[in-house]
Each structure stands twice: as structure tokens, then as C-alpha cells.
Length: 198
Image (cartoon, rainbow, N blue to C red):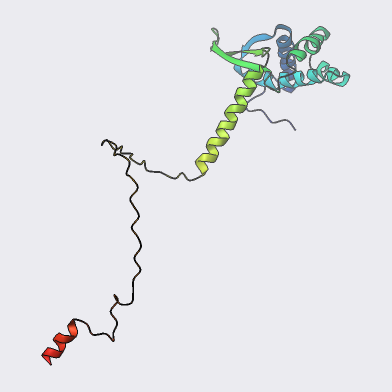
């Protein structure tokens, strides 16, 4: 089911609206660019993009579906043979609406709707992918807690460098004997003082 549009219909009734949009689509494919009111341009955009999608398929059934809207065979032929091959690489967004100043008579807001026939450069697609990747990486890094590391000051020694030290001669190891270690049985220097006091 198509999405309902906001606001009143164009023209007097639903049939009149279909005729208005069919004429606008025919003019758009014939001239590649038309000036109309903003309301009509916004209502024409989904219809024109659907017709271009049918033209990109290129089969007989699609041609017959387009012929139900666009009655001119020469315009349908132009759509299938000239416009659709140019837009074959583009995945959508076949039309562009540019708002212009109000109309002089009734001050109605006007717009230009045109086909986007510039080739889709691979560089633009690569740039879009890179921007999406950086956006995903930024979201991931924002989700993870960030550890704050305090900066460490590095102080350089400004004194003159010392001469390398010569290796010291190794001192001979001395073994401790049991004679040097006092024991509880042997009399110590404090023992004669204790005897003198008694």
C-alpha cells in the first residue's frame, strides 16, 4: 500500500491528480528539468523515481507499466534508451529538487525538479564508505571507557658524564668460624660484672 500523502490532493479529484502528475512526469523526461510549485515537485518525485526504476529493468512488462503513466511513445523510448543507461550505476535519488523564489503573481513557492544525470564517480562512493567507517569507529570508541594517563616528566641529567668505573678487585671470602660466634655456655664480658655485683 502506498504511503498516504499529507495535505489536499492536487487538482479537483484523484483522477485529475493522476493526470497532472502524468503530464509533469512526461515533461520531466522530455526536458530533463522543469519548474513547478514545491507541492507538485514533491508529489512528482516518487512517481518519477519509480518510473526510472522500471526503465532500468528494461523488459517489456516494465515498458508497459511506464506506458500506463507516460502516454507519449517517444518520451518512453527516450526514458528507456537514454536516461536509464545513464542512471544504471546509481542506486536511487534520480531526481533533485531545488527551491527557488516565489512566483510573481500569487506568491506560490516554486521549485526546479531535474534529473541527476551526472555520473556517480567511484571516488564519491569510496569517500562515503570511509566516512561511514570513521563514524562507526567513533561510536565504538565513545562507548568504551577511556583511561586517562597522566604525563610523566622526563628530566635529563645535565651533569658531565662520569668516567666508567674500573672493576673492583674481588675481596677474598672469609669463612666464619665457631670461635668468633659467642654461645650461651661460654662466659661473656658481662658475666664478670654480674659476679662482682653479687
